[in-house]
Length: 399
Image (cartoon, rainbow, N blue to C red; front, top):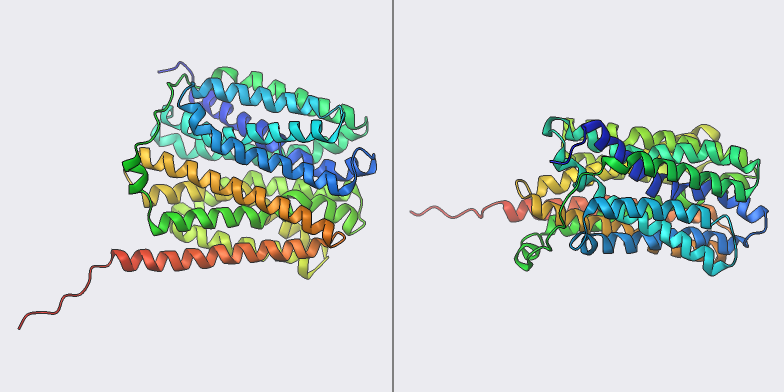
């Protein structure tokens, strides 16, 4: 076994999600108004550049398993953290739209690979009695990055956009070095057998893929447009907008641990339904009111479930495929790809719709709430069909 402690493993996983997703993706959101005000890119291009990161995340989710079949996961994870760090430094020079797009895409790719490989690489080397805690800490890195970006970005912006990007790059590089020795030395993972792929194609699993993807689409308005909605849509300014992003990040830090505790009490399947309903209510709030207390609630709940839905989905995979770790890893990769696909598609569609409607933020939030409501509906229908399929037919008694 690779010589490292559980604390080093947890630190590596937390740092990976913090760099690849927390900073690599979410630090961009509070930067959107500043990029527009500084004239680096027009508003329509700025939101498309945000969607480029989500497209890269999809590519990373698709490539992670093939990469792990040929290279050690520890080497891949280190390389992805370096790539995410390099992307921050590269974005300090807005040489052209294609240049910026490519590096935002690269940051997203790094985040997608890290999301697929980090937890499965670390958890097998952790004491089973502590895997729940370590898993929660890994996903908490996303929320920590959101909160850090909401506080760090406004401070760095006092020195200009170039300094802000370089500062984010320096923090990411430091975390990469801190996590370097924490990744366990694992061998490449063999590709799954076709027989296994057929065995996990059930109604409940296909339903979970659709639900998880729709959940991603439903959260896109908050993930991409929240700060801009408050700063420019409500004319509250960047400082207030960044404050809502901090609330989003605080929720994201608490979300994974609270979601796991809820699932321990009521089961992952029921907890998922509660999550879908709660998120739909949270995302529709900006459509109904501009009142600060309700917008704070909306930001906190959406933030909590952005990473909080991850352990719920992972736990649901384990419920549907008990005692089959190989199938669990396969389906977890598929669910991550579903999230990335729906997220990227929704981000590009929302960006297009935002331009077509002249900046109608509320329409985007309404569509997000609709996607989450549809996810809940699919879960209820798939659950009933699975229960019906599992119930043996009643045979008439013989006379």
